[in-house]
Length: 191
Image 1 (tube, helix red, strand yellow):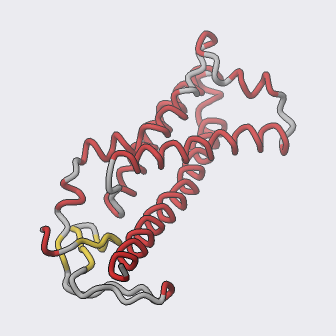
Image 2: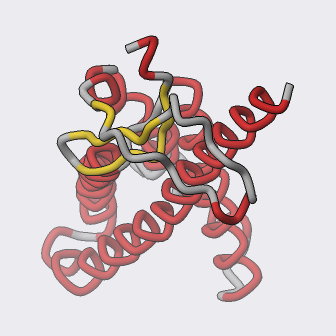
């Protein structure tokens, strides 16, 4: 029973590290969106008009979301599609809460004005950004394949779990991937 409890605690720690990394990744996603909007307003909106500039900015941001998610996935691969969809859902909820919360309560933008960006009949494509945010982690994981996680190999060094006060069984080891260490523990007897 004690060994089983330790494994559950170690797996929980692993999930915590994955979530901490991917939730922190949302801050970078918000920075990309801010930079994209700034580039639109300062760079090319006066040249092509507001509607065309918003459409172009939407496409640029969707591509940036995909590339950014792929970079995060190379650094810390998502272990399964379920986790990838959960990360995408969380990112989307944070994005919409930030957009509508800050837009309405901080900047005082009216609800109809905020919702106008989601009106496809007016040529506004912004609704594709939350959809891309939702699906990007799962699509990147699917495209890169489960090999991104399977290519990991045991390093032989025992994991350290000092903050849990738990001794990790010697049969478990850390993994190292081509992209760097992964906080995932495996039983070497199964690999």
